[in-house]
Image (cartoon, rainbow, N blue to C red; front, side, top):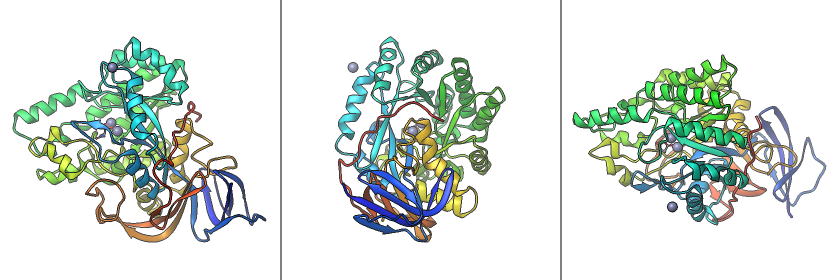
Length: 458
Ligand code: URP
Ligand code: ZN
Ligand code: ZN
Ligand code: ZN
């Protein structure tokens, strides 16, 4: 096994911050300290740089069949792009097909990811058809390290489950100490508004936004939280976007309930003014849609208040050509946007550099909290002896800009084209290997491992 010494970096975790050295042997961190008196096979000088835990993005959709097409990043291209941006582990969603088993879906996803991922990955299981058969499969999934189960309260006829199924799913998942995650929007109400807009000939991307008003998310978030409180299951709301939804979670804390909340980078940084009658807005057609400035302020505050624990991406890219499926009807635009590569640098620049969040908070919401919630801590999500050597070396002062011409995601536009950022990720290590250095990927297809997860420790 070869050893690697990272010298003199400012090593930051969720609860520590010191200039010191990190010694890696093989895949693992074996020593941390000031001026470590050791010889290593290789030395990286990190003077003046930040050394941070490799990022965990717990919300990505790679090579996913959706709305008549597939998301355009494969497990290979998506995890490689993630590594370029300092995200060393992703959790991808397996989607059960209604009328079929969880096992069939898992086999299908394993077929696409095994031997192709460049970065480490795990799976959530989306239970889209909860019945006595899928109920019986939950225990097997947990045994295989898939300890989070996603429910959709929208996308009726494809992914949505009803409240009766939700109760049953939560009760079963609770038996195994696992976690229920949710896409919390009111599917019936959205479908009604979509139908009304279409019948009125209102077909541009703007009406995607107007078909999913804040109340559709607030209502479903409250309903989910109430049912979770009744069943006592560990609960997590994915891609929460707005004040109304976060207030439901805030309210739940008043009865001593804890619900984990993830927002995504786009909801902190982009707003609904991007939706216009022009088709350009299709770049940001996602569900839930972008919201208002006041919601961005709520989310930043929610992070600092500890109500929002995770910033993910909901990375679900489609080529511009694929977005054309909805050129004449917003309801046919494949939902999702590309962000897997830039989550960490965007949040560092807009959050840490601009003084909205501390460096410790940055580490928490990009890595540590997800590792704890999703059962990977302390192997992942921190810098400690015995942990996987998943590390990011970031120059906090270096400026750079985002463009589709230079990004590594398999998508031909950027949702952040031309954004100027402060803070550049220069080197990324995954399990002790230099995975990216100065813009070059140095590990190949198949290096990424499936990470078997345990239950929430938070
Ligand atoms: O627009 C989105 N979010 N696409 C991916 C599927 C989902 O709802 O997360
Ligand atoms: Zn089947
Ligand atoms: Zn969703
Ligand atoms: Zn998603």
